[in-house]
Structure formats: structure tokens, C-alpha cells
Image (cartoon, rainbow, N blue to C red; front, top):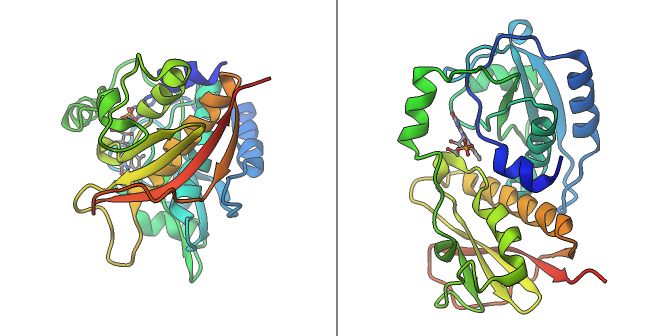
Amino acid sequence: MKTMELIRGRRSVRTFDGEVIREEHEWKLREFAGKVENPYDIPITWKLLDADVHGLSSPVIVGTDKFIAGKMHRVPHAEEAFGYTFEKIVLFAESLGVGTTWIAGTMDRAAFERAMKLEEGEVLPCVSPLGYPAKKMSLRESMMRKGVKADSRLPFETLFFDGSFDKPLTESSAGALADVLEAVRLAPSAVNKQPWRVVICGDKAHFYEKRSKGFAAKNGWDMQKIDMGIALCHFELAAQECGYGVSFELSDPALPITEDVQYIASYCVREAK
Ligand SMILES: Cc1cc2nc3c(=O)[nH]c(=O)nc-3n(C[C@H](O)[C@H](O)[C@H](O)COP(=O)(O)O)c2cc1C
């Protein structure tokens, strides 16, 4: 299935139909997760876990006992690397018809950390349930979706800019890049805050994080950088599908920005020959 269809079709699934995940799907997910790389070259260990074996639970998830979790060393750019990598796994699961939900908060974190044998200096950023979506969402799930306006996203011109932050980019003026940026716009994010901002300068797409209040933890961990990794993943996959060549760069163009905005990374985008 095409990436753009997967991105458009994905939503968080919190109500599953109770069917045990098929062995073939479990095997494919394990194989895919074991191979997927990230532009920061930061290793991440993935495991599929059974809730009953490890005593795992999430108060928002019903109808499945299977979870996937990842752990890594707490190093610079860990958040972006995790976001990028886990979103590739999420979209692969979507291609198999397996539903997921990014979960960083609403889970028994201690139980997941025990199950992953988390060691000193390691972090378990998020987990996700794996299973087949139920036909009808639980009332709790419907209410959660309404609470964070999960079905809507910020307008194109709030998120994307032409050369500098004082020049919003409209969908019609984005030309051939419009579809690629739309893939970024549709990405999932913690509490649906959508912290990504992208400034297009010639053949470069510069990604910035516009921080929301109350997300950065005292220990420096910034969950919204996970969202940024998801945005980078969507950009790269959609650009490749649209036939562009892309290369990842960490090279701050030093554009004027406000205090709540931080440079994250860039992609150099080349027309396909
Ligand atoms: C980093 C991250 C953390 C999240 N943590 C939670 C969580 O703890 N519990 C939850 O129910 N949803 C969580 N979500 C799911 C978001 O609420 C959801 O992606 C967003 O509302 C958009 O809805 P959608 O995924 O259906 O498009 C998280 C998403 C991301 C990207």
C-alpha cells in the first residue's frame, strides 16, 4: 500500500476486537522492527510483549493483550530518533491492518520498564498496543478523541513557511511539495499539539519545534521532539513516494526565530531525474 494512503488512513486505535494477533503479523512486525534505521543512527531495541505474561496494562486500551515497546540509551536526539523509527513501525503495522496507538503517558510505565529490563541510562519513550480495530470505539475512546480534537489538524499555512517565519506557505503556492507537507500535517502527536513547523528555503526543508507549555520534563526529556521525529519520518517517506531524492542534514540555517521555537533538522530535496 502507498505511504500516503497509510498516512491518511491511520488513526490511533484504542478499542480492539479481541482477536489474538496472527502469528504471521507478529513475525513480520518483529522482523521489520529489527531492521528499521533512523537518520541519527541511534540503536533502539524493540520487543513484542504479552500483557498477561508481564502484567502490563493501559487504562485507555481494550481488546488486545499484545504491545510493542522500544528502549534506547538516553543520548542527544534520542527523542527524534525514537519518533522517526516508531512511526515507520506504526505505518508498517497499518499496512498489515494492525492498529496502534502511541502511548507515552496512559500506561503502567513501571510494568513496561520491568518487561523491557530497562537499565541505568536507558529510556522507554513510548509503547503501542497491537491488534485488530473493533468496529465500534469504546465511549472512553470517542471522548478522548473529542477531547484532543484528534480528527483535526492545524491549517497548512500555520505550519509551513516560505523562506522565513513571517511568510506563511499556502497549499496552492507549495506546488509539488504540497503533498509531502500534507503528509507532515497529518502526523500524530502527543495530545495532538502538532509542534512541527517547516520553513522551505530553496531545495531545503528546515524543521523546527514550536514548544507547547508543560511538555519538557525537568530531566531535559522533551516529548514533543518525539513528535518532531514522526514529522521527519512522514516528510521523508512522502517525498520519496513523490519521486524526490532526500538527504537528511543537521545544519541550522540560523533563521530568525522566537524563544519558543527550536531548530531540529533539515532535508535537502532534489527533483528526481
Ligand atoms: C509521542 C506521543 C505520545 C502519545 N501518548 C498518548 C497517551 O499516553 N495516551 C493516549 O491515549 N494517546 C497518546 N497519543 C496519541 C495522540 O493522542 C494521538 O496521536 C492524537 O490525538 C492524534 O490522533 P490520531 O493518532 O488518531 O490521528 C500519543 C501520541 C504521540 C505521538
